[in-house]
Length: 437
Image (cartoon, rainbow, N blue to C red; front, side, top):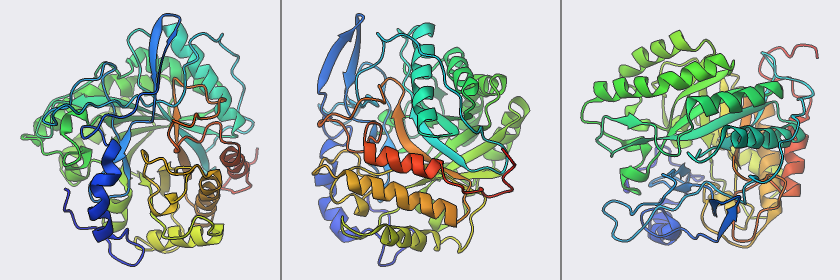
């Protein structure tokens, strides 16, 4: 995977030679190659919470970051000497000590044909978290999302495998229980938010950077799909009980795309869950060819690099995005949702929007303008909507990010939040007929 040729080559492609030369430098904070900084360990009602960056890493051959999820107690990486995976999904202290708040309601709940204005909520559950804590935290996040004028939320959480060739998929220590998922979905439903359930394969056992979820090679793919079906069953049931709108059946599983096992897996899922079954493709794979997973709804994890200066006007960013999307098709994209979109608030981020760990000089304008441009592209290309990456379930989204935290965080950055509210409050009718309020 390290030497994989880009699927699309042109002047906008991210200068492969230069990137390869600097790959090791960029990955100075890549899980399994270096120890991610842990800045604060605090006691809140006797429970430890580690503060740090969201769990993303560089992917070989791509400028897109990858979720790197872990068990709550970090373990030494396999085959990487003393390197340790420390990806807490974080960004701020928890709200364990705060009382639960009433859930405000979305002003205009989503209906078919309306745009999905959403946020990715990343959730590593912990066994010591009580039902009351989970509900309180869900209420805190729902209030924040409603304040952003969001009408949708996607709940992303980890599941685990034993290695690249393994056929076994399991829930781990940080995988929410179906019962906790029930609680979170119920709270969001009460707030009037459209909900998506998005299990995502953890990568700690895949020996990054060579291994990632997009190049797994199970020795028996039929057995892999059988294990996957058994794992997803209880979460499909929870999604059905709580009237979720979408269930993401897979995320960035490039090497598994095209396998006939998807047909049976999706059929089994649709028997248990009556909403939409979706698949989220990696951005470079999306523009490079057909995504051979038989779903009606396709999401794109969209981290298109745009080679412009930090002070480039929004119009240049829009042009850069359109040049990438035009490689797939020109004109409207009424069946495509941006399942992930975002960028770091720092210098140089336009050319590598998925660079999660680098901390160059803080530049909130870069992030805010990117959000404004992406929203314009969504409207002009008549897309289904966009989900911004991300808000961490255990964080307080009303607190500004600390200097040592990821530049990728948008919660607590006023300029970006203003652009999100402007986007979500726009009069865009969506890809279909927008029903009357």
